[in-house]
Image (tube, rainbow, N blue to C red; front, side, top):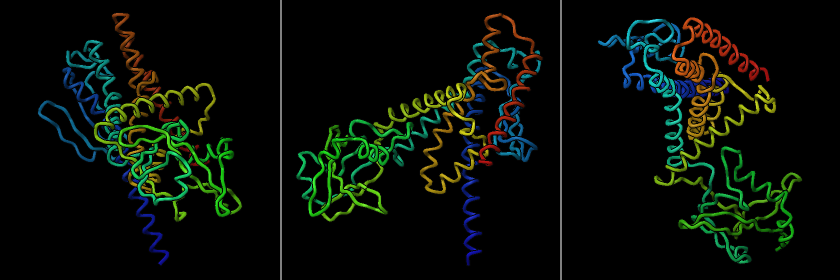
Length: 375
């Protein structure tokens, strides 16, 4: 029986790995489709649009010569433009197009990733909710009437003592609640005892019927395994029932854009910490680590996948714009130099630089994945 359960657990985990691979592949395909669509609109000749790397599993050639292929290794893909890495006399070849057109095509991949991050964030906020909590049910309690303003059913709690919950900066409800109890002197000064049980209040930032205000929440102290534990109480000493707050359709538009922008800002800060040595390389992970984290997170709750999707999409957008050889950011630098000089850098030299950069990049992601598995 245990053997059967083990097989079932393994198969379930494999299923979540497949979901994670598909999600990562989707992010990459969105990026490449951005290049493809911009290229088509601006008159670039496209040789191939590939899903995956390695030997071909399936291919279909259009009448205009474009090849669409499915390859064996589902960890990426590419949009191959004619004359991108070689010389060509065709006016529709990549390197024969005007610099501003090439810059748009190169930037389009990251732009589509950023746009998809906003869309995935919108789905998260409206369909699943995150960060804020909402009071689902609460019995009448004599404790409430010891404070002038108290929680009511339907209240959206978005912060504690003026600090709002922030998924990007890892400031969650339980974390902020614990910090307030441990660090705020007013919490202990306002404490009272009833029937041998200690209570105190905590200022909560809430939204009620569209109006934001501060109310008092009542907490009860319990001792569990020798440690003090504070929890919200009602008249029958049960915890309040909370549910994740879901943003409405209109409200989520602005929130999803803000959420995506703040993640981009967070990534730039992390990159800065890496370059200055404030953050260890152990904190990084390659595609294998990404798939592992996505699979484990999705296994806990499928809704968590929609938390990771916008984060991964923003990561791809920012990372591809870095001026690292072989990435879009470095290619854009070469186009800018050509635009300023009015002549390109030797194409063969540029190709060698990007080829060497790709080898270094692949080696780097393999190393960081190995480091993660050895920890």
